[in-house]
Image 1 (cartoon, one colour):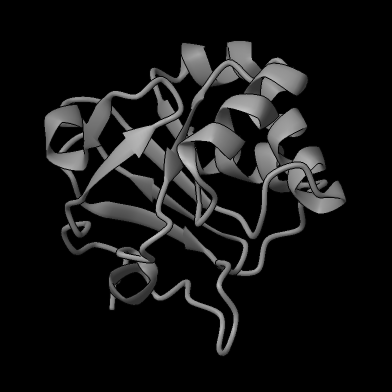
Image 2: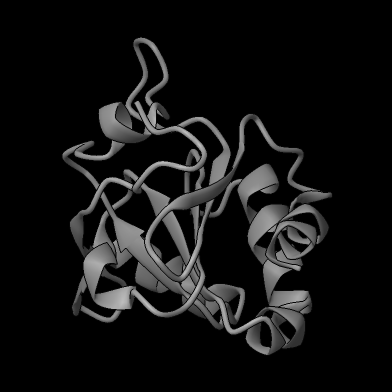
Length: 145
């Protein structure tokens, strides 16, 4: 399981734009991976909108932000368009990241709401478990500072 100060588990997932994203390709800048249960649900929408509404601050921090759920690429495309989300959403319908990141929910096909801030060297700088969707963006920005 992932730990602060240790290398973040690498992955390769398809984004809402159809491109393949590899964590190892993002070295040199901080990366925010936020796992959430499901597209277009109240809490997940508030969480994503919080990042959207403070997007300029994430850009100033130089961070790459990715929302990850078990939803499909098509679902992500609709969610992103509906709420004008400026960051990429990664599809993990096979639940490949549930175990290495410790975000799998027992008996459910969705992820717990958890965020991982990864530093420019690819190490986990901060782990936030069971985050509050309304405070999430501010907490992540604080971790990036």
